[in-house]
Image (cartoon, rainbow, N blue to C red; front, side, top):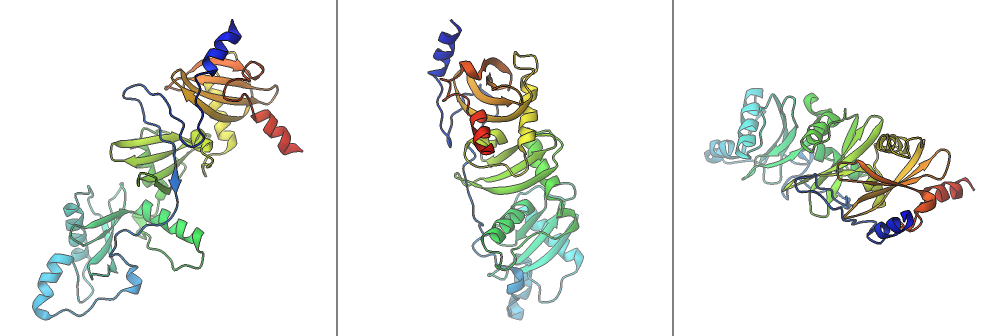
Length: 324
């Protein structure tokens, strides 16, 4: 009877390495497949590195009008002018920010001022005084700069935020994590790329537990646990195998597999009955666990009885091959 139930469940599993569909309850957190492509995008078509751009001459009769419209000055502006102009640009862009510090970085190709602003405890930004203003957050700029260095270490340094209030990238991404429903004490974070839908994707690391990729979509945040990121053939930078195993160990408490000393775990796939995960134990073959959307274990299958579930257990065989 038990094997018949296992077989019936197994026949429903759909596995897809890059696009596994996860059945969800209404109102539950949406889970994306984490598909990314790399590459840096400029903040706007007109934005250039301010160090390679100088202010062009303007006619005296146009000076005041250009100052008011674009925030461009023929001499170094005062701090009060920089704060006032950058706050005005952020207001025009409809980005919530009480500017507490700002600097004029330079000018874009259209000779419009480019400012860095610090918003106190919130996200920092770079804003170009175009019409409408073009705004990019400091985390995105840091991520693009890192990707550019990885692609070409000899490339000119990319534009990044430098104000003291904008130096803690982890703190700023943690704010996004809270919005996405991730409430761990974030210890590492970064932008990892752009999704196939064109949305920014960030990685969050959690101390002693698995982290997440979070995608800022128009409809809200899409949260993907790192164990599912690994199933796409990509690895989270800030989550170790030990942290994945520690998270899996908490799932098994109070189940027939509670004695399993989890050393590794992998996401197998999902169907209408839930999501399936393989756990490898320090002693013994391991288990396959079926979890619901709340990550509560619904059923546990010893590996010896789960050969037909998603191709069966593979972690023990992989570990043995690695030792050879």
